[in-house]
Image (cartoon, rainbow, N blue to C red; front, side, top):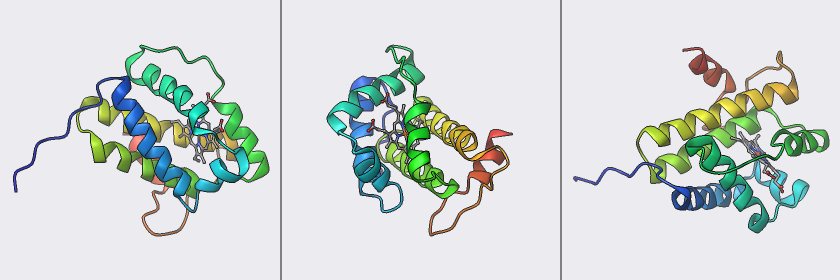
Length: 151
Ligand code: HEM
């Protein structure tokens, strides 16, 4: 059956919808959801405009984002360690969210940036020598991302 190709990520409105879908899935996820719902007590009405600024800056350089993105993850990690499996799940949901709505160079960049940050964030939190393995169905091993990032 012929189907229309999906549009690329074009602007803030696209990011807004993409991020709403992503966080809907992330909050509901049994592995990473509790970091938002139980540990941070994230208010999406507050988080969404900030994270949209973050991605608008990362992809289009058309917004300001001057907050410290590392600090909240370090705070989470000190309450409950963010494991390689958690970072892998984040990547799995991010890729799926992007692929469900978009295709094109910006969509590829969004996935690549998310993967790169997930990997570096994890290494910064857990230590450069921490194992990048994990378990569970559909798990994206961070070791696979490391192989890809070396290409
Ligand atoms: C291990 C997977 C991850 C988990 C469980 C996680 C969870 C969280 C939580 C709970 C917060 C605090 C939200 C609040 O203020 O209530 C947060 C903030 C943030 N996250 Fe993550 N995160 C993960 C990975 C990532 C990755 C890979 C990125 C970037 C691509 C990212 C980008 C951000 C940014 C930019 C903020 C700060 C937003 C602000 O300015 O307040 N996170 N994250």
